[in-house]
Image (cartoon, rainbow, N blue to C red; front, side):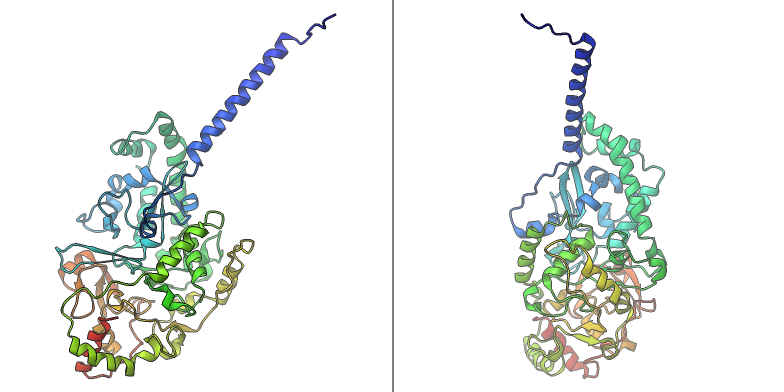
Length: 487
């Protein structure tokens, strides 16, 4: 005899509704994952393209929604520096290649939605022009002359603090650029835009310590105080540390010739791989987002990358030959490929240059960095505290102006003069080159309009020290400049 189903109809309906709710919840969760967290791989035709535009893992933590980021200069031009002659992110010194969705050094990666992050090329891409109306040449791995990272951070913070940073305003501007789906519009209105505003305000607060210290200016950055003071990194207190780490941006080319050398300006690490990985973390990557394999390929690219040769035909080869002899006699022990002190830390008491950057990096900071991410196979072990600055090889020295670790001397010609004869005030960030002086044009109306006023009397900006070769006769100094054009 068949058994009857005694289940109550209301119970069956309840189970049906429960099943539907579970299915709906799963669908909502899947849609949420897809719209907010799915990660799409990037594809590049070459490692150089990856260097310029590839992700180094900064987007999950520090990335900005691309379409919000895209319209910020249009919505908030009043918060950009300058007189409006340069539009958009170009006003901050960013270099934008035609046809690209972002400037060089800004990656575009989809993690749920398109996000923009910083990569190494934002600071380590040189530009130069041979004339004011000439074509801008872009040189991967060179030190950026025009990009101002601090001004970029300030712009983002000022935009977020503006009363017009609202969903209505930004969605209207985004509509001029692209058509979002109805679901994306809802997500931007109620989640992405409010969260972006909060994140930018948090970032501005995190960098508020910079307001009480001298400006970085284009082509410079304080590379380690942000790491020291970040609550998720070394977590030191900026209220108890008034150090100034303002430093000229360094080139990343020809890393192979620096194997085993002390690295960074003050030699705080001598392991190239650690420098590459910690650089990505300093830019905003975190251990679980760090693309270690891709960064290994990037390191291999930078090891072999040669700087561009001196591009002008004004070099006097006969004079350069004489300068080579002078270089061997005067400079090679510290800067030549076989120099006994090349790649070593020269005590600050000897070299005499501004000591603020040296004071910025402490033994405690080195200890904390070595303890960071210990559970990962690539953890750090080589950070140290030193007592001076590194004598660097001079590969591509013609494109590394301004000079000294803080970028306080505009040209090689000025560097070969006693400190008292070097410019006290000049303008940096104008990328038109001055071939005779081996440096960029740093005075005159154009330099003042496009550049940043650098005052060597401010803390951290001193141009004293490194007076090697300054006692040479003028004709010998000129010969030395000619030879340096060949490196």
